[in-house]
Length: 295
Image 1 (cartoon, rainbow, N blue to C red):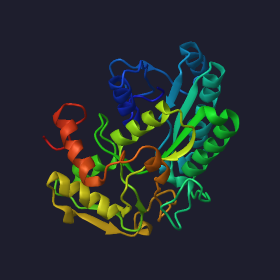
Image 2 (cartoon, rainbow, N blue to C red):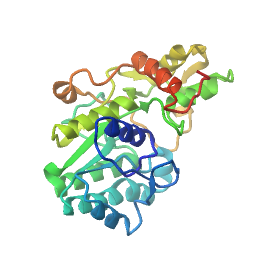
Image 3 (cartoon, rainbow, N blue to C red):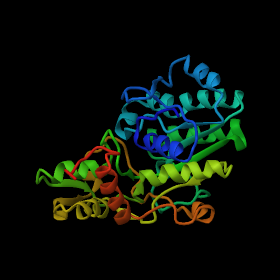
Image 4 (spheres, rainbow, N blue to C red):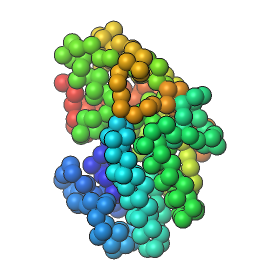
């Protein structure tokens, strides 16, 4: 598991262990107990993968700061395309399968939500790097790679970086949180994304699969849903046009993903926002994630 200290990586580690799989995880910058330090860009990283001889290598790592990718396209391409490609080749050489994650930002956001077969057209460097990775991995690994596209991942995690935590940090201090009213996608509950991915792997699935939540909403609806579930004043979540927020990278406005393929393979895997937030609170109470709300 390359990138086990992140949001999806952490839940992949937990769910894999719970399902009886032997798993070794790595971190790059955020140390956590039981994880080995590994920089995916290090020349020795491929050797590390080959030496493990894993049946499956999961790669939920990368450079996901969209505006940062826009400022540094070379870093975006290295972290989101070239580094996973190098480790995928090492995985293939040792006889394993490779699993990585992509985004609805490979689309232009003109008419989402999108299915796996819809035409792509990224607007920003992050989306372009992810799309290049999808294409190169598919060309080189064929049926030995599974690419999971997801979007707006939220939920319990130790780093507390995702949108749900951002909402809580603002609202618990009584601050107004300005969010884009014209950006649409699917809130996708992180633990569900991880479990769905594992089950796809266990089934031997390959290729491209969309793994996203069932609801297509704007950021205002997403933020207010988080606030409502946790007992905060949802009126503090205020929508403004994207153009007023000064975001460094262009965003696909009508984004999001349709997950009919996943639903056909694994019905009912992805919970909606209300159910996801209820589980978020339960996971925090059980000490499995950072507590943003004093549960």
